[in-house]
Amino acid sequence: MNNASTIAQQYLAAWNEADGAARRAHVRQLFTANARYVDPMMQGSGHEGIETLIAGAQLHFPGHRFELAGVPDGHNNVVRFSWTLRAPDGDSVAHGTDVAVIAGDGRLASVTGFLDKA
Image (spheres, helix red, strand yellow):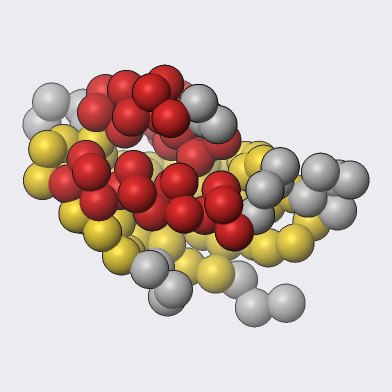
């Protein structure tokens, strides 16, 4: 397995990428072709489905950025990390934890997201 911190940072970079072409490239590099993403509010599969989710989240939260919260950890082919979504003024608007399953080629095969209760 790749380093849990590196995987989490690459993942959040994809969610923070505002340029559509660059974001699509991030998604293709980071996720397997049949990867699946699911959280309490949305789900999608494949490169196109996941990229569409990210683009939709950016439209819903313009100018917001995801930041790593705490230290990612993992074992075998599973990585767990927490994040904070920050508004342009720096205020925290959401917190969550994502659990990713890593495929044999080092890319993400699935991600399950959990929103932390405030």
